[in-house]
Length: 253
Ligand code: G
Ligand code: G
Ligand code: MN
Ligand code: NA
Image (tube, rainbow, N blue to C red; front, side):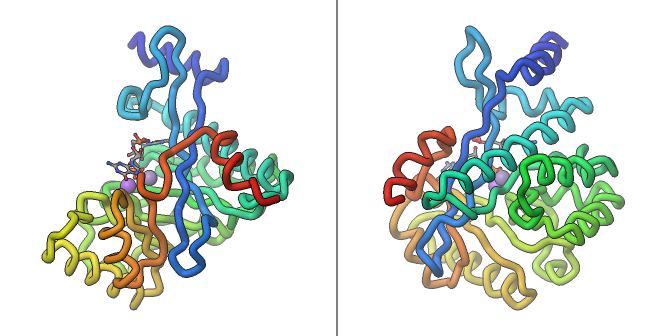
């Protein structure tokens, strides 16, 4: 399609950018991680959100090229923050990887090349995948194990919206769960209990938990009380270009 061709060309000429959303570690009260989220600065169209073009990329192996670019770009950004020596030095970054990319043996090499190219250790990167990937693709689990053997962390994104039951948590080849923002309903007792249950179960299987979509103080308080490990959301910071994230956070250096 036209959009697919334009996206492919845009990727080649550098129209894609990563924005970074802070993830607050609730034990240390510091930002030790960010999630990389892609945007397309399409000439004449402004800054496009992923919903406008990632599905198009997903329809072909273009999404693997996008993933490879995102991994390399995020790794290079981590190295740049290291070099700055500010508050963002030494942090980790999570990159969203499509099921299609995860199904290819090539992903392993893409991650290794991204890390080696930037001169960062693989344990600085987290690969975010969705639950459907584990259901649909048997080789995906194998590739996740290989990634983890390399030192890369794996996070299960949008947890709670798919098919994975709490009973399956012990067998998942992942390091952490990202609880979907639809579970953070302010003032709703039943949802709060559910979140507490998921966090407790995850911890009993030694999985970390990040809550997504934290928009108000009540939600944050409930998450602290539930011993959630980390939180992400507009309350704590919107996705921003690397330069805008560096400025306030690095002010103390
Ligand atoms: O950034 P929000 O800002 O709009 O992201 C919307 C959706 O797009 C999320 O589900 C996210 O997982 C997905 N997404 C964001 N960045 C990337 C990326 O680099 N690659 C892939 N495959 N999906 C992404
Ligand atoms: O599916 P994934 O978790 O990768 O995508 C994250 C998406 O959630 C991005 O579109 C990001 O912009 C969005 N997001 C991040 N924080 C918040 C929030 O606090 N509220 C809402 N509504 N969306 C958020
Ligand atoms: Mn994500
Ligand atoms: Na998510």
